[in-house]
Image (cartoon, rainbow, N blue to C red; front, side, top):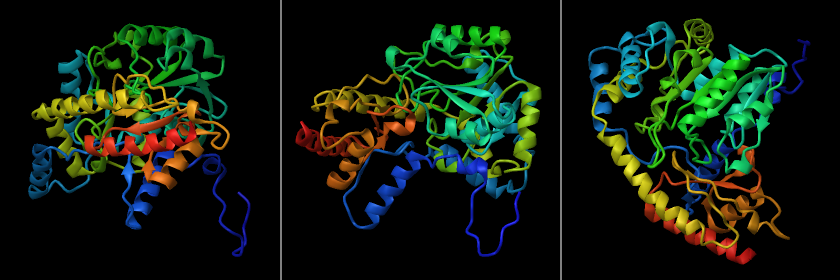
Amino acid sequence: MTTKTASEPFAASDNVARMRASSTLAAAQAADAMRAEGLDVVDLGPGEPDFDTPENIKQAAAEAMRKGKTKYTPVAGARELQQAIIEFYEQEFGATYERSEVAATAGGKQAIFNAVVTLVNPGDEVLIPKPYWVTFPEIAIFARATPVFIETEETDFVLTAEQVERAITPRTGLIILNSPCNPSGRVIPREEFRRIMEVLTERGIYAISDECYLRFVYPPAEVFSAASLPAELRQRLCIAGSFSKTYAMTGWRMGYSLANAEWTRAMLTVQGHSTSNPNSIAQAAAVEAFKGPQDSVAAMLEEYGRRREWLIRALDKIPGFRCIMPEGAFYAFPDVRGCLKDEIKSSEEFADRLLKEEQVVVTDGAGFGAEGYIRISYATSLERLQEGIRRIRRVAESLA
């Protein structure tokens, strides 16, 4: 570290200077700024449900406050929450975990951060399939590892074991998997996921399975957690889970990790010196989310399914658009390269045109490693989706 004078401007550390700001958060900020100006914004950018947190979960939080559960908890989370997570995975997926393998975190993002920074060393390679959630490569970069991207467009964005095997080098230490995928909505089939884990196990490579959208899967695709794999395929696996999407709890900041006891201890060392324990009241709400009625999850999934069916049909009718049917999550990821002509040369410029001319917020696919695509969230009402598509069509037709 060099000594700086008082007059020198602030300079971010090398670790942070290499990182890029989140494109999804940038889209949210743009929408907020336009709404503040009184504009009628159609915001198709948010990665959060438009539903309210279920009432039983809110009541559990209120009861926790009344009972004085407002103190620190263990860094790994309250015993009740750890047990609720263990029971959920046993009931839903037949998986067995011990408390020493479970940690509650301040959102799924912290679970992924903890897992990456406790595992990789400078120069290690982290495999990241494209398209990816914008945060994956930035965490790897922060940890001074090298992100190595796996192209999946040839398989319509569904990762295969063959693609993983081709990407492995002697420096590969970790892969980050995400199914259902943000932004594409694609789901890795159960047997393919198992084959991927077999390849990784054979090569001694660790894996993080980001299961943020675990329950939001549309038939005939199946809900699948890597926790259901045989124990020998889970020795180097960390599952990063979240309450944010499934239970409309984005603002509560509650997630968790499931990993072997040694890895979990290392993650708790990091967490103990960063955020300590997650919010105690949010933990009580999370216990109720897993142990209480699950009808709200089914209701949200049904409504997302209705929006999905309408939206993909509508997108495929827009000149220059092509969109694969998402199997999970709540995003469409259309290919807009048919709209990129003389005056518009990138998906970033296309998204910017939508924003400036029609006040429609979408997220540029380049931020997810897929130039020529845009991400559209259908976690908004069908009425607003329809208005957004009308506006998008006007821009696309003007470019045809």
